[in-house]
Image (cartoon, rainbow, N blue to C red):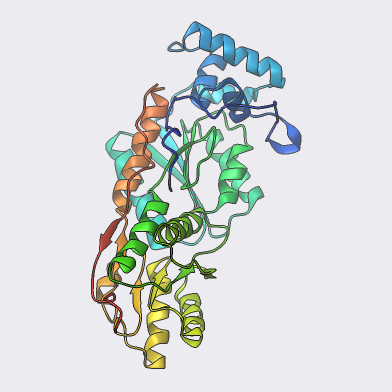
Length: 359
C-alpha cells in the first residue's frame, strides 16, 4: 500500500496540465474528471460550478465553463441532483483479496468516519470486475453518499472509476500518480528503497527481489524503489521474480533463487511471500540470515514470530485509513490547500532475518 511527485496535491490544487481534449469515459463520453483535468482544477471544483455553489473564484468558474463547452460535457441529471443533497453517508468500495493491509486500512477509515459523524455504506468484491465495480458505484450514488472511497491496489480499479461520472468526489488509495483524482497512499517507492538500502548497508552486493503482481501499483512502486537504490550504488539490478502476494508464490520464488545461487540477500514485496520464501530456505537447509538475508514488507502481526523473526517495512494502516477520511473531509469542504497525503514513508523494523554476508 509511491514515490509521489511533490507537485501532485490532494484536494483542490491544480490538476495536471491538459493537452488536447480527450474523453476517458465509456464510449468516449467526457466525464467530470476530464473537465477538471482540462480546466486545471479539482473534480470537486467542477461539481461546485455545475451546482452553482459558492467558494469558487469568478475566473475559475469561467475556466471550468469553458472546459465544459470545449469537451461538450453533459452532467448526469441524477448524479447532479444527488450531489446537491447531504446524506451524512460515505461509500466505501473494497476490491481484491481481503489481505491484511487493505482490510486494516478499511477499519481505520470506518472508525475515522464514525468519529466524524458519517455512516459508511460498503461494497466488497474479491475480484476487480469493471462491470461489478461500475454497478457498485451506481448503487452507492443512489444511496446518496456524499463521496466514494476505493481501496484496491490494482490499476484497473482506478481506471474504471476515472471513467464513471459519479457526480460525487472519489478518493482512491493509489500509490501511482493519478491525474484528476484525489488519492492517498504510503510512499511505496521510498519504502522499497529503504528496504534495499538496509541490505546494502549490511554489505550485500547481490540483492534479488520477489515482487508482487504486475497489475499492482504498490508492487510496481516498491520495485522502482529497489532498482533505484541498487543503481545509486552501482549494483546489478536483476529482473525480479513476480509473485501474487501469497505465501505459495514466495515459496516458489525462494526455490528459484536458491537454485540460482546468485543472491546473498532478497527484498520480498510482502510478508506473506517472505514467509513462503523462508520455508523454502528451511526445506533446502539454507540458513537465514547466515546464507541469505530476507526483508519483507507490511509488518503483519505474525512477522515478529516467523522463524527467524522477519525484518520488514512497517505500514501504519490505521493511520492510512484516517488519512483517507481526512482527505474526504477536505474534498467535501472544497479545501484549496489540502495537505499531500501520499508521502508517508513505511518504517524499517529490523529483526533477526538480516545480517552482514559471510566472508
